[in-house]
Length: 308
View 1 (tube, rainbow, N blue to C red):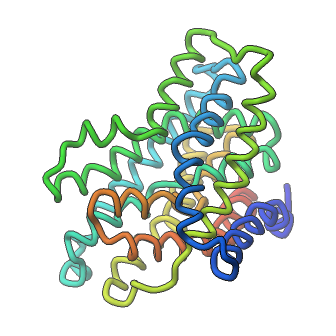
View 2 (view 1 turned 30 degrees about the horizontal axis):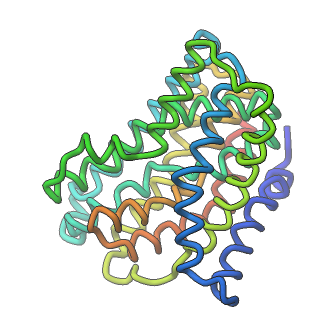
């Protein structure tokens, strides 16, 4: 069993890139407008390529991974249910603005795929990378539907068109379809895909740092605390319970706990802003979540993982 400090050491390279992005954006001429362009490149091109490559790399054995996939989907559904329930809780009802909640609810159950893929191979080896890619492939559509639905409903938008434009859903659909059909990336293109994937991880982590903002939390503190507690405390505990109930093996348990302890997706504030919601508030939540990931990932992997 890896010690808690060893998990923190494993995560240091990823969080050092986040810190580098934050410092470069704040203290050099490469400020926020530059990183918005980089973020678009990663979100629409580089990261979808990595996602397709990771899913196609190994044949998908549904029988061997069905328990993990079921646990991931159950964890996503539990996160969505908890986030949706926040405005209806008796003690919080009068403090939650419905529009703010619609734009920010996604923070509680979406996850930072860049950190997931960057970290999984170091935590659980090549099998861990394949398993997290499969988990991403099945869970991204679910959590994206959960993210878009309250905003589309509250803003009178069409849910289907918003989902069909999501590059992560498109990439995972392509990757899973290709895997089921037995398709592989041609050998002469494999090295190019690998380099694009490496670039997407490094730039994705740095854009997460560049997008960090502190502020805009004062008027919705109850909502912010509720969503962050779901993301960083409740989700790892639910994941631990699911791993125990479904009797996942050691590697699958580590992958599920890593998935549960991740910071929220860096693109949450992009989605909120593009759909007409309070992007600054969501960006502040993303920032706090990224910082909290320094504690929740070692807690999820080192403490809860040790009980398995």
